[in-house]
Every structure is written in structure tokens, then in C-alpha cells.
Figure 1: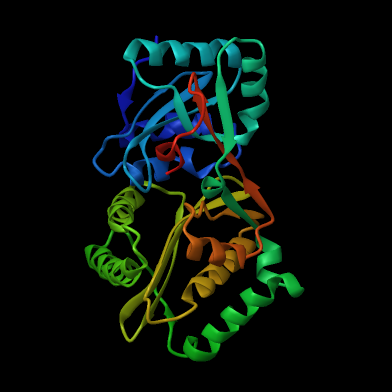
Figure 2: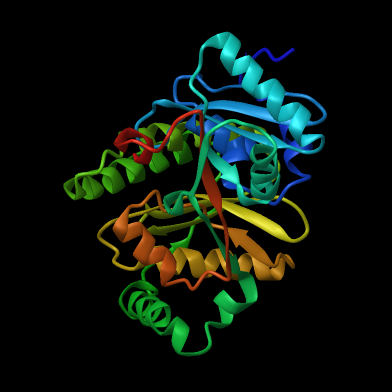
Length: 314
């Protein structure tokens, strides 16, 4: 019987053990789940075959549902649908991994239920090939090389590596100041970055409890001006969780990506997931300049609903 429970730090090993059997989708990553559970509202159910999530939307904080099913898809999906009926919850799912799509379609071909399944471009995870990004050969990387070269010409002489330690209160304080500068600069774009600020603070908290996180940080005149945290998932993959930088240092985003990838190359890691763009035009443009080698596509599913209304597309 499905019964949702609140997500806590104690759930880390159980969730990571399950998600390790799937490609590294960012939304099901434990550190991401914990970081974005801004008010400890994320809940879940997990057993040996399925993982059901009730989590806040990154942009609106309204609850959404998602799931992974490892085996016996039809049986487990029916259990999820029955649970939603019992709880009188609308059957709307988001962030569904593409790897489940053939099984979803097969299920509905055998049922008499109406459904709508759509790609959600804003939730696609961007996958960078480490070697290609470090080498940046060819015309396809031209814009990336230009922005990286521009930063190096203007700032590389004054920016120095900073050994960020999430256990240090003074380092956390510097990171919080950097975040405030970043948010103030972003607000004129008419996008609410308050939620991202809260998520970043929770990320810094969970960083004290993870041995898979690596930080790349830089300072200028004793001021923290760039901070990125990435997680090594396995021998082949990493996930980049947050990248924050001083808005006065134009093109530092590309400088941080370059340093992350060079570090991962030394560690023998082949790919990094730099997460989705949430349909934010400037973020999409920056990530496309990095020439992703692949995307982890995600879908939205509506069951018993004739179509997507405007709120479903938000």
C-alpha cells in the first residue's frame, strides 16, 4: 500500500540506491530533491520496484507528481493510479523520464483511459561531454570559446582559486553574500529567483552531509566571486547542481564550466548533467552555447484529462 512520507536526510541512501539504476535525471537526484524541498514539503514512496514523488515545482512551488518504475510497470502504475483515486488527487505527472515513455504508451494502448503525453522542453537535462567541452574544437564551439576567451582576457589575472569548505561558517557566509549579489542582478529579468536562493541555502546545508560533492570556487581581492558545486554520481557521470557568480564578472559562467570540466577530465569522468533551463530564454541560450552532446528528455502526462490547460504548461 502506498503511503507518502516526508523527505529527510535519512532517506539519502535508499533513494540513491534506487535512482542508480536509471540515467542520472537531475529531478530524482537526492541532493536536488533535498535542496528544492524549500519548506521540507517534498514527500515520496519507494519500494523495490517504484519511486513516487510529490514535490514542489521549481518555478511556482505548486505540488507536482512524478515517478520512476523499475519493473512490472503495469502493476505498479495501476497502484499509483489507484492511490491517487483514493486520495482524490488529479492524475497529472511531470518530469517523467523518457526511458519510461514506451511503457507508458504500451499501458494506455491496452487500457480505455484517455491520456495526453507531451515532451516538456524546459525540463530537459543538458548533458555535456567532458572531453569535447574541454577541447572545444570546431565551429560549433565558437561562441563558447569567444566568451571564455573574453573572460580570461579581462579577469583571469585577478581571479584566484578559493578552497571552499562547506563546513566553515565563514565560507558559508561568503557564499550567501555571493548569492545575494547574483539574485539582485537577476531580478530585473522579471523572474522570481527567491526560490532558487532558498534552494541554494539548503544545498549548502546538505553539502555538509555528502562525500560526493566537489566545489570549484574563485575569489577576487578576498571576495568570493564564483562558486559551483557538482556531484560525482559514478565513474562516468556527474551532476552540476548550482553555479553562482559575481554579476560584475561577465562571462564567468563559462569560466566556471571550463574549470569544472577540466577537473572532471582529470578524474576520468566522461559526462556532466548541467540540469534544465526551465524555459528561461537567457539560461537556455547560455547552455546551448556549451553544445550539449545529449539531453535527458522528460515528459508530462495527464490521465483522464482531455488536454493540457494553460496552468499545465507553466
